[in-house]
Length: 231
Image (cartoon, rainbow, N blue to C red; front, top):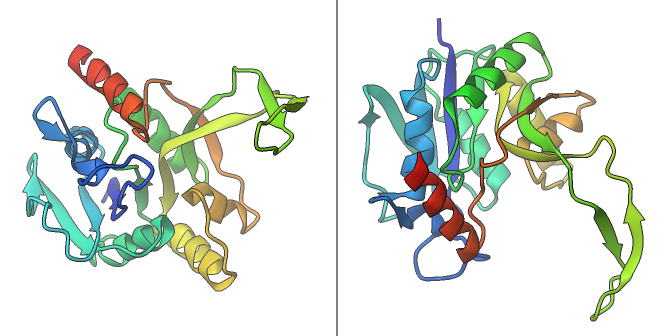
């Protein structure tokens, strides 16, 4: 029986990062960011294969059909992250049924640890609403007044607030239903859990390692280089 498949939306241009190369193709330790993210998943015993959603006309994709002895399927993503995840769902092999688990992971999160994959899969197997990695908010939160030279409007309570990471794990049928509903309603979910929450479902929060960094800025890339060099 299939354990879980990984889905990596990698069709973004990385406009917030800047530069001529999409950030998922920037290299650390001789490999592009997305390869670090993909390899960590495929090396794991509970991941059976991966689907990578690429931008139309992507010429940088290395053309992998297999990696670490497991299948890798490339498909064309969409104009948004949600659309790319939806395209990846459609590209899953026929034997991966509606009840199978998929782990959606950011291509620009290269420092995922195996123990977090185990915890996430266990939680998602145990919860019909799915699960996601994250961490409780520990910093003090300030709301700005929205001005051009912003000032503090208030201090916001941080109790019960979490930062959401990836992977996020859901059954195929639930994630498909959630993404289709968001598209019909004209809602652009910022992550897959948000789409699932809109159905009235309550995914389980799984505390993960806080060094599961998403590379968004050049400073993040420097931090990721240090983390990956340490192992």
